[in-house]
Length: 173
Image (cartoon, rainbow, N blue to C red; front, side, top):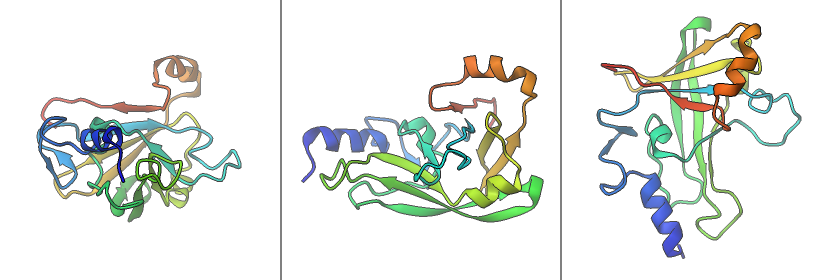
């Protein structure tokens, strides 16, 4: 049984009318269509961690770019079709919400994007590189790896959020 707090967290995270507007196919109409993640050693599988994939913030502004998942189902997931033109890659990644904690059946309450190892290796991604996710008209996610000069790495470290995620706001997106 969901506690009142858990239910409130779920409805806020999933964009009910009080918490963030209308969601259509995982996208808030007229909202963010591009986000980015500064890749960590853990994201790239370089730490020996048992965790798979990239953790996605629970903030609704980040979640809108991904498919909507039903929070009342344990660990709901969806396939996300992604395209990385740089390496002529097209394939599915797995977007999953590990929600056992909210359902009283576990300890986790996090979103992850899994199946990224082959893609990130193909892109030759390095820690500190920035992976952009852009939702386009086709509903596909287009990925672009931005390699920043290593001499700017220190400045970039000062700008990033603790999770490495940021929202990219552009006019007419």
